Image (cartoon, rainbow, N blue to C red):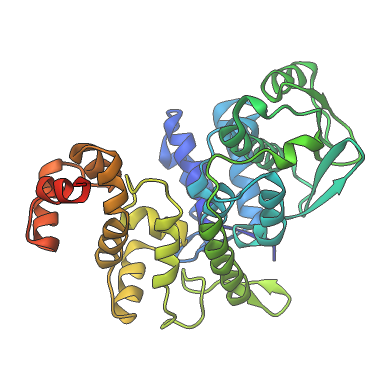
Length: 344
């Protein structure tokens, strides 16, 4: 059965709450679904119902569009980090088509390279698709906007369902291109040259590492002919070593600010407690992995930044905490170490 990761539900509910919607009102429609309890996957029908409830609760027929604008990389788990580590849009689209089922097995993506344009089409697996398509289309474009900035200019966006004149005007203003309704396909159409504009977050080594992680997750998640997940875990083997996945996610971030256990667990679609337990079974801990990554970045940061900025970029909330940890690691102060590092 088509499904989405629990992060899709969490991000939708969080967005509704941010708009002032009472969380109890949201839960009335979802609590009765067992698929929302103790599972990392949620049936597509539940997701569609929640999106439609969002329309009613906000009195906004473009709820999926508004939600899509607020989607972040973390809502896509490993796939989000993978896309941000790509060299360009070609690589990002390839990652999307290969691994989209990891976060949402609710549609089929096809890419067509035309003489002047590229067309990305998405066919949903639900007939009740307006909000789902609006959310996905907007989230994809918003992600590329964040990476490419003003260079990202679309030619057209098409939808298979009808839109009112006011809806089309609002969508056209944000997408900054023609919006067509009642079309044959749901599609994003953009110039070919966008495919090869370098992403500012290019990291070839990390891209390769994240592809490996995604391939393993996709293989591990497949049960028979469809994606299956059990007991809030991607993997049936409870003793699977996931430490290298945590390492890959930390390395994928340009800074370690906010890279705590909760965030990494969310990216892997498991609870912090489950992550802690699985890392312990692997003979390590999140703190050990985080400290190793901090040490790996240390010299380069101290060569180009102040001690205060280095502490911030390594994810320490206060410089004093960084100094304390540094003394514990190297039995010296960051200042003395930096002076030795910069000595001719």
